[in-house]
Every structure is written in C-alpha cells, then in structure tokens.
Image (cartoon, rainbow, N blue to C red; front, side, top):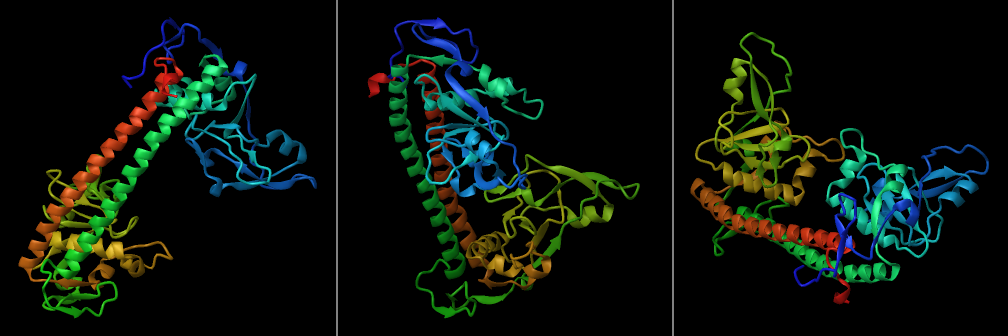
Length: 443
C-alpha cells in the first residue's frame, strides 16, 4: 500500500480502534447515521388466521459480503410483521449472534417478500450515507478484534442493538465516502480474482496428487509392464504379476480401546491416546491429545510403534496416516484401527492404496454410507487389495513420498500467498475507511 498517499493533516478521533482520522472527517455513532432494527423471533406455528409462511434470513445465511440464498427457511408472520421486517434492496444485514458483526448487503434475487430473524440486524442508511461504508467498518471492527471488547467475549457473545447503535465510526463527507467505496470495490475485486485463481490452482494440484497416487498404486511405475484385468471394478487393469487378495492376507488389524475416564485396577495408568480427529489428510495432528486409563495388558497391546498405519473407524471413515513417533509414547482409542504389516509388506504403500480406495468411493460402498458409517476391522480385513512384491511396494511408496511432497509444498506455498492476499485486502480496507491512506487517486 506504499503507493497510496496519506491525507494532508490528521486529528485524534478519541476512539481507540480508529486512531487518527483526516482533519475534515467527523466521528459519529451508528444511531445518527443509520436506522438499525433487530429481526423477528422465529415463529414455527401460526398464531392467527392472518399468519402466513414467509422466508427469512438468519445469522447462518449472512456471510461476509455474500448471502446464502439457498439456505433460506420460512416462519409464520402476520401482515404487520411482514411489513415491519421486510428486506429492501441494499439493506445491510449484520449478525447479532453467532459469528457476530458478520455482514452483507441484501441484493434481492427473488420476487417474493423476505423478512429477517432476531439473530440479524437490518440496517438502512440515513441522509444519503452508504450501507457499504458500515459493511467495511464491520470488517475492521472484526479484524482488529474490537468486537470482542464491545461484546465481552468472556460470555456468550451478542452484538446487541445498544452496542451497534453506540458504535463510534469515522465519517467522511458523503461524496468522499462514495469515492473511497468505489476505489475499494476496484482494488478488492482485483485481489479477490487473484485469490480465486490461486484457490483453483490448489484444487488442480490436489486432483493431480490423487491421480498420481491412484496410478502408482494400481498401475505401478513401469509404463511397459504387462497388464491383466483385476476383476475389481474400481481397479480396472493392473500389472499382470501383482497378486489381488484380501487385506488380511498381509496385515494385522487392531481396534483401539473404548474410552475409560476412570481407573478399574490399582495399577492402571493415565496415558495419552489417539482418536480419529487426530488423523488428518496432511498427517497426524498431535496438538490436541487427551488422556485415559489403561491396564497393564492394554499398554502392551495398544502402544503405537513407528510405522503403524492408523485408519479412521468412524467419522471421516477410511482417512489414514502413518504414525512416525511424533510423541515418545501414545496409545489409541476405538475410533481407530491400527494396521501392521506381516512379512515384508509396506504400511506406507498400503496407506497410499487406502487413500486411492477412499478417493474412488469404494469405502462408502463398503461402509454402507446410507447409515452411520463404520469401517470395522472385519470390513477392512475383507477389502481386496493389490500386492506387488515387497520391493516394488517400497519403490512405489518412496516415489509417492517424493512426488506428493513436492505437490504438498507447492500447495502450502500457494495457501500462504492466499493468506497474504487476504491480509493485504483487510489492511487496505482498514486503512482506507479510517483515513490512514487516500485511495481516491486510484480511481
């Protein structure tokens, strides 16, 4: 933002979150600039013959700078309430609860009347002010953390009508407001386009990663190898020398321990354990580890060893990762299946193969996802998998470690660049609407 100039002179606003403002700007409270009203309490049943069902917006449908029109529900209201709570084109909606102060401008995309619930404020500008100006101010109040001060985040957070009405705001002349908002639309649209382009790039990288894994674990690394029909729908043709058999043929599976919050025996020990939520697509997450009681026999059976393959039994069934001694000692709960190889089979190869099986949708079929999905040890044991010779398994795993590592590094680099763009967007909005920079020359 170094190419933007400051205003010629400044004064102290007297408001902590605003700081100094241009000399010719005012500081005004929201109640003097806008008409704000809290919505109607949800009415699930009619109270009179006059009541009719009417669609309404609530905190969940109001996102930052967008509204989820596809998630609109309906409630009962009488004609007077419909008139009082109807939304007009250009109304600003601000969340009173939930993700407090999250805001968006209502742009009617349907012909029917729409009202709003009491988890949302409807704000209309007075005397030529702009709804979008207050939207930008809400973004600053949120990004600076000032909303937590206003709403006392030690309790259940509510951005009440009184708090909104008394919020002090920077207030330039109306023509200047319009110029600043026009410049911000132009600059934020450019940043948003870059973010969208980079987000799409990440999606393409993930698709490439999945395709790379599937090809390696089902076709091998030799493009000239003789192929055969696997007889398994999701596999198609596979190398002719690969064996196709059930997982239990080369691996042992152990389900973890049911949660035990108190000791049963004198020599029980309170120890850390893994649960399904610790298994993430990027690997094992150990920042949130709980403890429970284990008996001496369970300690012997359920301690994890480096190289163990952990597979989610519930939740996001089939999600898996290799344990590589991220902690010196840990055990596992019954939301996890632990897989260990027999003979010389590779857990790393199997991990990639299970990722491919999950990606194909075969896990959902195995677990009958019409009901609550569970990938039990019995179901895992019966999954038909490919068995290259152990040396080829290791070669495939090594290849995929290298290639997916490159893709993952590029994904992470792109994510960081997106975060920087979002920070730049937020900083630009904050600096422009508090007068730290003059963006009007950008028009």
